[in-house]
Image (cartoon, rainbow, N blue to C red; front, side, top):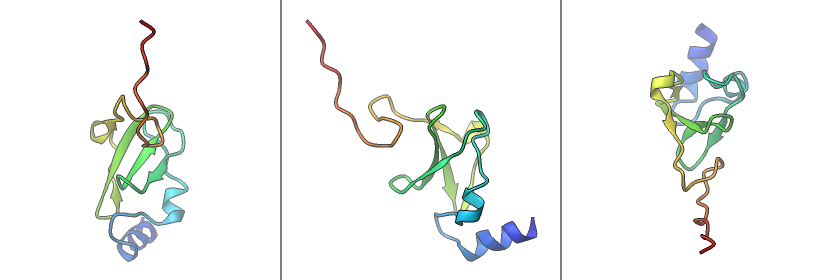
Length: 86
């Protein structure tokens, strides 16, 4: 725990150190998370939830996660709305 705290303090700011990011998983799906540069959060592609990082500390409680918007794909890029076949 002490080593992790030292890494977080040394690499403060919005990002988390790579060694820590390599071991973090989604608390819901237990699948790997990826870092989103745009939102500065960790994304679970498996369930479509974004977890915030505040002062270098990832908030991975399920209540802290936010569902990704319907108009965005899981990579965080906007997609065009689907055309109806009227």
